[in-house]
Length: 318
Image (cartoon, rainbow, N blue to C red; front, side, top):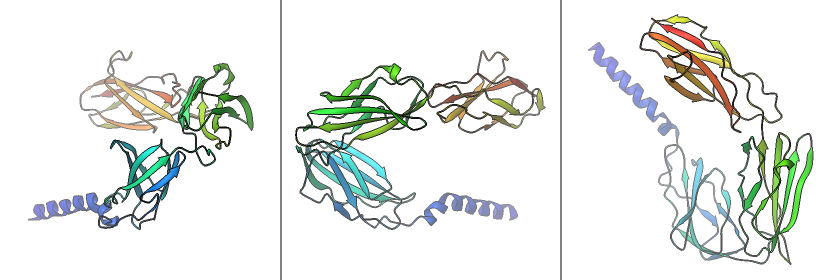
């Protein structure tokens, strides 16, 4: 009887663990999101469409979807705010939105028709930058930049600014007729944050500059320093926690680091027995077979720079 009671208690605990988020989250499945803009039949002149709706109590995020006249979904975005801007080509569209939280979601509102119409007035339009992406990290100079065309634009102005102990202009060009530009990579000669900017111009008006940042980081991460377990650590079959440190990054740009732990039965690591990547400095692994194992760690940052491997330590499972 006692054993049965324990099973019941354990089952209730498991059910509570997996359903606690459902209990804490408000059930919004019977609610709906009230939209503000654009309303049915709206005609938006220009390329930038602003979608607006009212906040819904209990919703943590909102999913916005837009389909074009060919019934192709051009937008499917999850946003936390109640305003969402997106660049669309000229044409006819429908949009809808729903509220979401961890456990529940509302139904979508009935799709709303609207039209995007090309305008010669560039004042309210936005140049949509394509590549490189926002906050892109690299260990090599970027030489090609791309953005989307605006139909009413005649030319584009382009700038790159280096942000390192202040801001310094690196490159600029005007009167660009295409929606891309190639530059000399030697202009990006230092590890730094760089800001690239584009605006569209015609004979009447111009857009504001659109801008993004990218980062050049050529410095390799420090060689990881192993902490525990000590070399030739002897254990029975059990779970071991591996710990190490990476040291302070002394470079101008400090990219996020991913560590790779490798375990082998070969001290030269000709064959990798187990490999795992982590952004932390600790990994657990369960050893079940008796043997001598070797372990090491390497660090790689988001720019693609790799450290040297750490020293090698061994674990004896007996």
